[in-house]
Length: 117
Image (tube, rainbow, N blue to C red; front, side, top):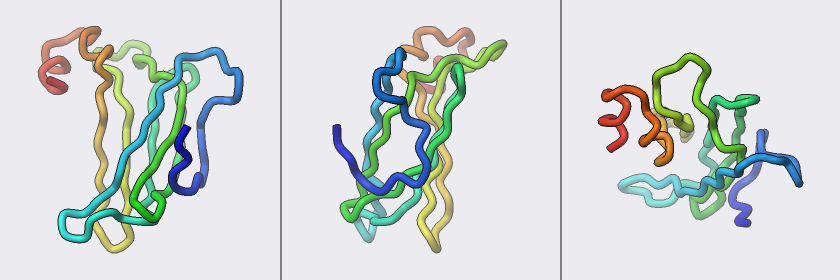
């Protein structure tokens, strides 16, 4: 398992936890400056229990974390997603959602299916 960046706080699974694991890796990069070291990546999702975490990118702008597979929110009609917030000092904060492929097929309304295709 890759260990990019520095974990600030993690909601990752305990060894031997009985849950499907979602492994997320990526790179934070600027159009002009390339890889960005030290960016903060906050993440969250619903589930039982919901989870939150934070990590920082390494010198090559990479990050990695593992968490339990997100679950749909009780009573929600929205597709299951992982929230991400990327904060680079001196720059605008980026907040986005990553919809999971299995969640697309299970989306219960047309708006959600279109938003992730």
